[in-house]
Every structure is written in structure tokens, then in C-alpha cells.
Length: 193
Image (cartoon, rainbow, N blue to C red; front, side, top):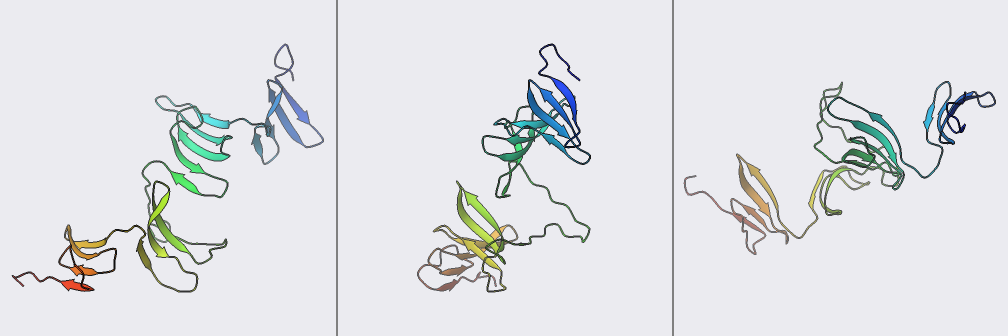
């Protein structure tokens, strides 16, 4: 079925592959089989599904410049991406992340299921692309929880909206003080206790 005068927009049935081809501008833009809809014809171009809303549009797209799968706000690929998944399955969230209970009642479950670092399961904070902090299990040979400040700075713990313990970059620990000095451990006691 040819849809325009120059015959570059058409819908055709491909009996050899049991699929329907939709060509727009001469390119195989859509292929439909019994179980799969393929968008794009392997050309170097962004492909997208745009949800045209009343007040706001959203898209699910392949950003061909980076080969990333994007979910975003707007109708143009790459504008205001909310979620990006790269070829290594690294998922980047551009906004706030909200987690809710799963069927087991867990808010968040981290599980490492393969790859070269089997056994490493952790949350990593990055600043400017560099790792700055880690919480989790970072060693394959031990079952332990680790908390790391990877920068040359202190690590603090607090309760009741106040800092209670500080470990400075050299490993000195201050309890009740933010400056443990050169002692390995400095405990300051409140005079009212």
C-alpha cells in the first residue's frame, strides 16, 4: 500500500519474514511481527516513542549519539532525560528517586548477580564523576559491611540532629568532639554527666 505520490511512504507485507514493514521517506522505520515491534532501520538516527500529553509530553527513546536508552520529559530526544541506561546497563537517574515497598516489604534491596566483581554490592556516591563514598559490601572474600569516605576528609556520625563521633582523615576518633587532635581516640565528656 503506497501512501504518497513518490512511493517512499508505504505499508507492505513481507511474506518471507512474516512481518509488516512501514516505510516513511524510503526507510524501514517500523517492522511488525507477531510478537515484536521494531522501530528504526539500524540507521544513525534517534528513534523514539513520544507520548503527546495535554500539558506535558514524555518520550522513550534511543539516543543514537551515545547508544543510550532514555526516558524523558518533552518530545525531543535528549531534552530533560529522567532515566538513562547505557550499553553497560548503568542506569542514571536525573531527578529524585522514590522507592516503595516490594511484595516482601523491602524498601530497597541490592543484589549483585554476576559480572567480574561478584559479591560486591554497594551504594556509591560520586562527585564530578569520581567516587567519594561507599556503603555496602566491597570485598568478594568477606561478609562485612563497609562505610568508606574515599576523600581526604572526615567521617561523622550523629544523633538527635547533632554530630556525636568524628573520624578524621588520619584515623583519629573523636567522641563528643569534632577535633580529636593527634590522639588515636579523644573522648570528651559533658560536665553535666
